[in-house]
Length: 457
Image: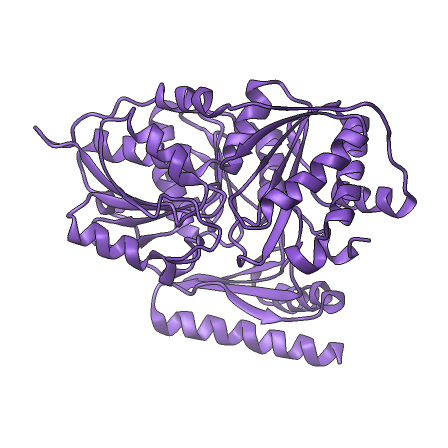
């Protein structure tokens, strides 16, 4: 039977050849089919990424879904957002994406949509409980193959008319698909847009021979940065393996992280929708929240996790939500799910219409220094308690935000400590006005963390 540890907060994920055996995945298909029918209905869309294990997992999962009585529409090897689109376009009751996302190539997993929401938390645990109890629905299911790529491209391309960035010159963009699922779809989409595109690694290849498709890791952006500068492009875009996360570099090759991309998008939205609500997560820069508020927006700091953010977005009717990792959820002009291909088009539109380079979209903002995510091993059974102890310590002396872990507010910056929902690790991040203050704040939080660990011992 599938190990309980692969049933995580946002998805079901493990090492494909040792933790996702075909017979067990067929039982998972029966469990997900049962759960989706009881919560939503029988019509289920199915898709997969281009990892080497994905076709085998599709075959096994499909067997279980059909055995449970589901009417399955397989839309093939496509980006995750295209599966989300298909569920809306075809009014499906649910959907399952087989993908390892940005994880190492030996991993794979399952993201599940139920009605208008993504299964997460306790709902994912319900699938495990159904397997343990062998509480499966049975019925005469069905299976058909459908291509929805053209309707998706029509829906996206019809929104965008990109002007020339200067007289006689189209926008020039370098796009790196990382040999993931974005390449074939983006190639067809670019043919419909007024853009001079340079394509990198657009052939799908589950070996990921050029670099791993995770745009949050700086070394994975080196090809993109070099090509942007060599080709004198206006900016560059990178996609993760299943195309639901975006990375970007400006015309100088400087990385623009998710929180600053969200700020660029948010500024544009506020020119049309004053007072709009935005959802960011606890790792995002304070500049994001301060600037959106200054412009009359309603920015809300919330928990990390794409499923959690989607739920909060629906609750607050936010126009945009985003994460440092590059998940961008557009309610404005779109369907509210994370789609890096659509986000790329929005970024092209902003730069083309402004006639200014990507770096200029962030002009005038405070120049702060920050750390990347700092990850520290900590057993699952202790990690949340450790964070609680650190929060209690800082509450005596500082203002803190505890929406997800503890974000300690210092005079000229902040420090974050939170427990990962998916791994036995603690995550830290820091931001300050100077490198010296950054080091001081980091030192204070690390000292408090060490004290909390000793109390645990």
